[in-house]
Image (cartoon, rainbow, N blue to C red; front, side):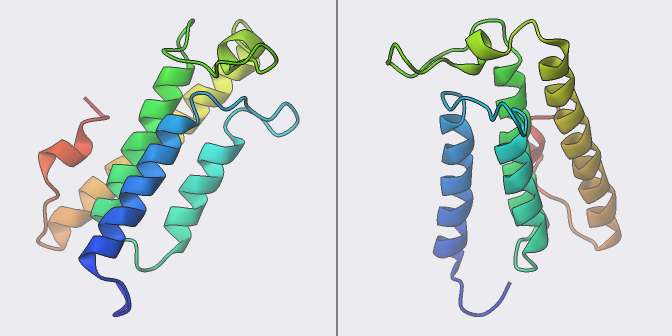
Length: 136
């Protein structure tokens, strides 16, 4: 991590991204670029930043996997309270490509989580078990 970021800044960034992932449950997916366009963009962003630690990447990756699992439900736990804004459950559910896109995203992110787990012991570090709660 570069010297300009304090631990509080970093925790705030991670918390904000995780909240964004929760909010994305109500945001309709992009019909042209796919339902996973925004989560993928978040994932590529966090992996492009050298100051992101394995723990930060793990926590955000778990939020993305949770988002994918939530979006794959037949009925979403909450929707926008607006008659003209349809949630992904109404826009895409039943479309096989929708489900496949969510599965593909989850597989990709989970494989990268496994890679993080396998790399950390070799550096003499273990991440707290609660950082892996999305895998269980």
